[in-house]
Structure formats: C-alpha cells, structure tokens
Image (tube, rainbow, N blue to C red; front, side, top):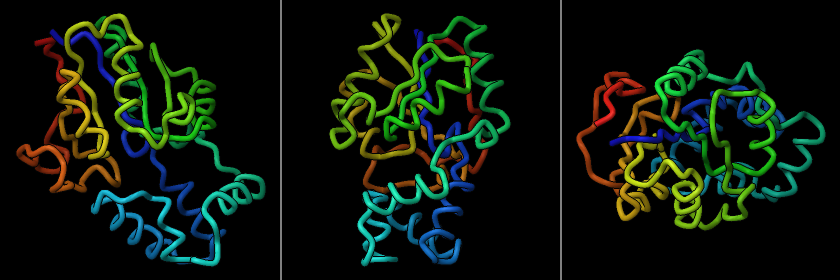
Amino acid sequence: MIKAVFFDIGETLINETRLWSLFADWVGVPHMTMFGVLGGLISEGRDHRELLDILRPDLAWRDAVSSFSTQVGNAFLPQDLYPDAIPALGMLKREGYFVGIAGNQPAEREKDLLEMNLPADLIATSGGWGCRSRPRRFSNESCRKPSALQKRSRMSETASITMSCLPPLQVLPPFISFGDRGDIFNATGPQRPRPEPRSTPLVNSSRS
C-alpha cells in the first residue's frame, strides 16, 4: 500500500527557467547556450555545477553563485511553481497521503518553499540535511523521516543518481516526463519503459 508520495523540487514542482535565464544574463552567455550545456550535463549524469567550467572557466561556481544571489537574487518565488503543483499536492493531502517535497537543493531553497505554505507534510533539501554530496544518505533520510513510510512510497525524481539509491529502500521511482528537464532519460539509470511525453499522470489515484 502506498502511504506517502514524495516530489522532487526542480523541474517537478518548480519551473527553474526564470532563475537559469537570469543567471545566463549575469554570466554573459545566451540563454540557449546555457540551457544546451545544462541539458547535456544532466543527460550524462554529471553535476550541473560543471556548467561554468565549460562556459566561463574564469569563474568559480561558489563565488559566482554567491555574487549572483547578492546582486540579482537566487530565490524560488511562488510564480515559479508549475500551475498544477499546488492542486496536485492538495489533492494528495485530501486523500490522506503523507506528502513530502525533497530534492538536491541548497538549504536556502528549503526556506523559499517553506515560505510558500505549500500543502505538504515535509519539505527538505539535501543542503538543509547536510548531505548535498551524499545522495544515498539523502534518500535514506527522506524515507526515515515520515513515520507513514513503513512499507512503500512513491517518489517522483528525475535525478538518476538518486533513483539508483531507491530500490534497496523499497521506494517505487516512476519516471515522469514533466517539466523542461523531465524528458531527459538517462540510459545509465534504472531501466524502465519510457513513456510518451506527458502520457503518464502526475498522480495515480490508486493506493495499491
């Protein structure tokens, strides 16, 4: 029986197009170039922080993000939520599921989401739990936190590195084609039939 549903953050609930576009402008590269390189890194299962090594090797990632945050702002805003994000979360809450939001994000993004008052029982980021570079620990923590997760949960996740940690934890990770990056299928991740774009419903109303 499925008792809990977890959602990834970036490009599942949050449309990151606005922030990445602002970052491209700040770095001084065309939007299409930024998104092309970013998509390539993701499709190869590489760290998105390698982006500047390719586009602006003169800039260190940590320093660039810090300066960008100070000068422009690097926060998730309510306007960045996909239109069906809140309705989907709310529907699951009303049906009695434990609703979790967890993703590989810095601690600051956790604060952004908490301020949105989303209908969720748990909002967490790898940065907030101090395991940003340790995906298996983050997956373990995600499953241990809610007491409802005694049997099985369903987690939407596009990051193959996280998906590879889920089977031993008895978590069912459906591949959902959703958002700008959701259509990228990493051949090195768990093998499953690839659905047609948008053909898989965001939420399966069945509890079994």
